[in-house]
Amino acid sequence: MNFWRVKLSLLLNYFVFAILLNSVGTVILQVQNNYSVSASSASVLEAFKDLSIAFVSFIVASYITRIGYKRAMLIALGIVTVSCLLMPQLPGFWTTKLLFAATGASFALIKVSIFATIGLVTDDSNGHASFMNFLESFFMIGVLSGYFLFSAFVDDTNPRSTSWLMVYYVLAGIALVAFLLLLSTPIDESSIQRETINAPLAKALVADLGDMVKLAITPVVLVFIVTAFIYVLMEQGIMSWLPTFNSQILKLPISLSIQMASILAASTAIGRFMAGLLLRRLSWYWLLIICLIVAAGLVLLALPLAASVGEKKVTGWADAPIAAFIFPMIGLLIAPIYPAINSAILSSLPLRKHGPMAGLIVIFSALGGTTGSIITGHVFEAYGGQTAFYFSLVPIGLLVVLLTIFRRMQAKAGISDKVVLDKAAMGGH
Image 1: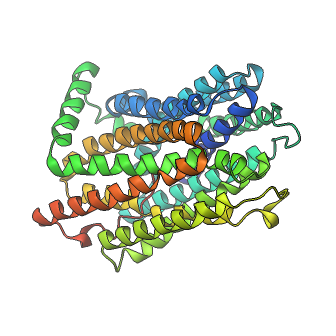
Image 2: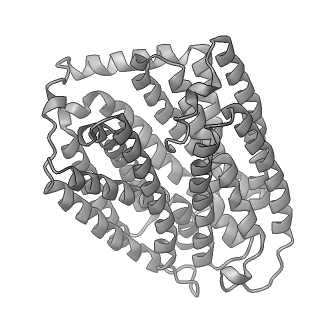
């Protein structure tokens, strides 16, 4: 098996989905312009993406070895290639919903398959951890690339132009290249197939659901679930609506609104990298509490600056208002939270419970993302963008309380903060 070719294929697969999954904020802005969709209606796009991820992730967790990792990834790439081609051919809000539902379902296949395949193409735990970090870094490169790729197809002179839909031909082309590379790359799955459980699918699903429910009702896991839900609610609410905030509140041109939203993705990537270094020396709890307090201060600093934006015409990054640079830096501060709490809960559980716990993380992260986008969309429509982003102070306050409760529960169980220090920067959601 040619390991470097398999790894290249996995990286390209992740790159495609990084662009598609994180384009939801850009697309929310564009469907409002093109299809006369209200902010609250546009917010459901997050639900089509996240709920399909949650549902399919749960289903394939039991069945993926029967399908085969390579076959599952090929199916996913085929689905998104066709879905991307439909976007410019059949422009409409319903097509957009279909695209995100297909992308979410396909990403569930991709993520489960890729994470499982890494074990087949790495020699030891160090190699596994190294490639996992590289994979997550490449995902962030895809996120950043997506903002500039979409903005290149936007017509600033005509906000109602559908020229931005042409970007989906490019994305379909990238997905097709990824499909052909994977198709021509041999992957030896024989060791996994020999371990496949021959129990009927229905029994496997019932058993997995039972394990998740039993785990979810334990107090420490219940607090963790609420914490993860609140965090993703806040993060996705900001990420999905930042391009619209830049356009409607800061009065930036549409293409620049999309480009400057990349600051949030970049600051999040930097924040997770820095946290990986800091957590080797600091308690995860105190680092996260400090980050949350500073994040609240940044919100209180940046949003009043946004209110003072005048009617001056903005043509590029150089003359953009300072608020457009300051507010997205919140990503630097909230970035460490999600991987740190995931590492904390997984480190506190026996290995046999990591599978069900991973399922709970995916499901409640998806639900949190959907809820955050919908709430922000409704507040944005009813009270304006500034009020919608001031709303982020509520989950920030809740997270301070929940993290404190979570840490005390861990302390009672005799689990040290040191357990999670080397794992807490291992990626996002």
